[in-house]
Image (cartoon, rainbow, N blue to C red; front, side, top):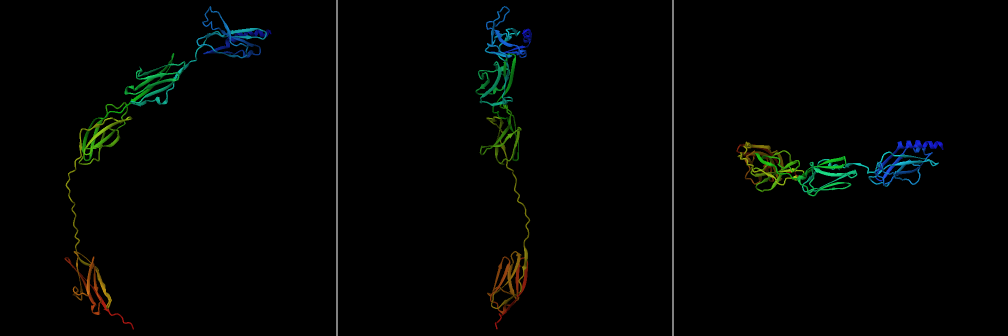
Length: 426
């Protein structure tokens, strides 16, 4: 018993050095390290905190201690609950021995009960980290989560100036902030800065918003030159690009006869172009549209000059061809062949001849002209000459001559015809 009593003053000293108090809203946690070492010797008695009527803890204030635990505990950690924000408390712990001896330690500092502080943090969506592009007439709805405890104060500025609340609606809540513009205009473009502040803790982000519109027409469209079937055009970029980069130009032409416009080229990047393959004898008008990501310009730049493609005046000279002389004297390509015939059976003699002009064909028998004798028939077709002898007799045998004559000369070919009697059966 004497050993236990002697340990109580040591506990008072050690407890004062190792007792810790952590305060949050409605809760305080007490830690006493050396109680675990002496748990086999001591039991913890009531833990006391000052009463609510003694919050200032002035030098002359009377101490009113209120027990937190109703029963003695052996735990070395205790949570004091249901405290009010702004309260200031001081804790003390009493150790009780089995024979009634006690030892008390008091936490030397007052504990202020307040909310835990979380630094403000703006969770910027990924699509707002680059330039956010919208078209004129669309709405803008920026919903951005903001974290922090207690709730930070949220402010919006545009180009380092307060936003115009007459055109911009801003709604702040415990979850974040919303910036809304019902109908966008070009003037709404700029750098919007969102700031979340809690005392000296600040977090800020900048959102670059670009409001784009259709561009204006190109400037100073003119016709540089007309040659052959080609027209060279040149122009300058528009004065108003619609707050966006010009992506190209669209070139169109119209024939004055029809007045219909046809697209020659789209997405032309340079400020010049040569229109080719025009029809000669026609007159053409030209116009050019500028284009950005919103589309083509409302109006086009039209060329004041009219391009006339003249007809090429050339005289036709027919080619001179050398006439080839195709005339030739008669010539037998196949002379008549010797032949044997039978009495009473009609036979024919054949030959072929060429010549230009067409030669006159005549047949002779033993140098006697055969033109009036009905027994003989003379036929000529495409240079093939035929002499038909009807029912020849032995007296019709002899030398037959074919004679071809034209203005360039003549040709003669002979053959022999033998006519024999039919053999008499024995």
